[in-house]
Amino acid sequence: MSCSSRRSRFVPSTRRIVIGSAVVLASFGAWTTTATASNVEPRPGYCVTPPSTEQRADILDGFVIENLPDGLGTPSDFEYEWEDVRFHSRVWETGPDPEGAYRVDLTAKTLRGEKLTDLEALKTFLIEYEEKDPDSWELRATKVGEYDGLVAGDEVFYFVSPGVAAEVSIDHERFSDDDLLDTAAGFHPETTT
Image 1 (cartoon, rainbow, N blue to C red):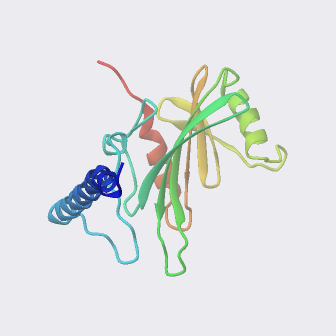
Image 2: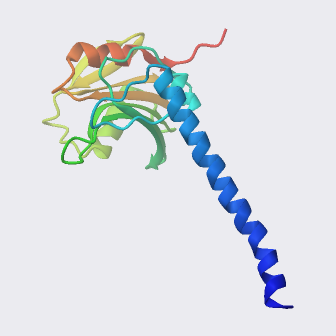
């Protein structure tokens, strides 16, 4: 095989890569134009990214998210497991600031696992997970919608049903206790009708 025939085999694949890259870049430009045209105005120093379908629908792991305080940053979703309990979380972050740091505004989590049998079992699990001292962790009983829960500082957690619980935490420097409890009350399992 001559050098010229080898070159002709590789040029079309290179062309496809270049053309494909151009299409992706053009699509990104179209999204940016659409975002700008639809009044999505990024704040100076902050990054705007398109939310996922689930984030736009305000659903996380079968829970609706109905109440959110104003001024939240960009959401990101995470899934992980610890001690046979699965977590799905959505974290809203503001940033980067002038130093390049991000700040967590709010976190909503679902917890699923057989050991979550009631509110006391949830509390016991979270003491270990969050490495809290059970004697000094100041918890107050609360109702979150129809669910029994506990509030401690900037977080509230509540038992939903055997094997299912939820937790919401908020940046207390920017948001109030009312914001925390209103967000938690609006974070509950979807109803199917």
